Image (tube, rainbow, N blue to C red):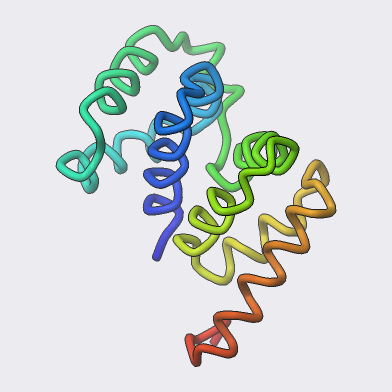
Length: 137
């Protein structure tokens, strides 16, 4: 479990729901390093459209827009909030299961996270505890 796994799952969920514009915004907000790491480690497991879009968006990215990018965890709340409003809680849980505990705690501390999404984060953490998975060493 890692933020790269969660990024791959988020993009997969976005494309499955035909939310390409939201996927483009997510890609535009993610740091180049995270996207290139994703391409290196998950290329074979991604649907073919996702690597194409990532390459396209990175090629169009200017130095100025590169400065506005950030960590994946900081770019995730708008996506999760949108899914929550659409009733796509299963997609939220699917992405959260891919995050490690530190990332989940960092996500729940994001100022723009919806209260219901934060409660789903807590729920997933409780399930991890119940299932015996390690939650923060």
